[in-house]
Image (cartoon, rainbow, N blue to C red; front, top):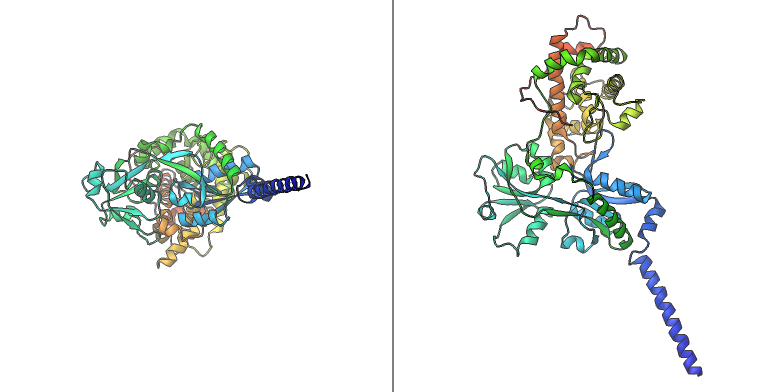
Length: 485
């Protein structure tokens, strides 16, 4: 009996030890308390990439599909979002593996490299994959055509992972050359320059990058779309559950238009540049708006015709306009900017015009005084669209390349580089829609010139209005198109 009781005691002690061990594993290794840890520290750490489809700094705040989604998830958890920006996917994996990030969100696919370091979420969206070619060459239409051509793919990319995954599954064997990241040679550039024939490219990334290389186009889309996932730290099974529940709700929302292949492959719509339409709008819309533009000019010292030109470019004088990025009203102000300047109703014509003029004047004062006119004004208008930080990045690039960082004509030519991954990853503020800013300033110059001709200035009461004589508006001929909203 004594030995039996002692054995029972040992068995009980062993059971308690096992339970304690399991509890310890649950808290340290199996991921039962990750959400509690995140809530205790008050922040969700999300690793991502800087780029148009993931995360980038907008005129006043971060933007990008992954950022917006991660911000909503952090809000549901009741914590702030901290973004951990990495240069490439290898950096994302290291951030997860070393605990610097709780999850990674960057249009990622489920493949072996991720499965070694993270828990893979359920798919939350899809993105097409396109074979892209130079339009001056015969269009390949089948995988067999691609197999005969010089194909290039970025190393450690979604496209590279896809081709590796399909290597032993597809009957047609496609040979390709891997292009290392950050060597200054993007696949689209190689195709456009004739040094490669085709490249495989994610549909969303192609939609954002095609404006830089108008000579390339989609040959055909792969029949299967690529599933997109978030990657969760390996000890975060409770976090994975919360992520999957959140992402499941996002899938129930209407499909974003950017996922439509037809929309992805259509040429980018530029703002309207048509003097005939402006002439019509001058007669029908401007008379009721002109007093507001003149009042704003009195308050800021800027030419009312310049303000009218900027307003026309931003919204075509539509007081109810809203952009995909959240800009509002006739002068297309971002909500935070409007609030900081005291706006009450962003859709009120007078309020929007006066607030937009005050914001432009503020940016004009921010641009270094040593910069001569009209260059200083053009840089202020560029900042109005892209944010002052991105303008400074363009000036830094200009100086690095031997240009004059105080001359708009030199800075203007570097704006496009802020949309090129090789260059924007080197800049403090990262990706920007530089091509859009370049077009915007060109259009404002054109519209201002037309308004100067229609309403000659008899006197120049303010220093800013004398710029009408100094500036030589750029004439741009283009088909009538709807403005970017």
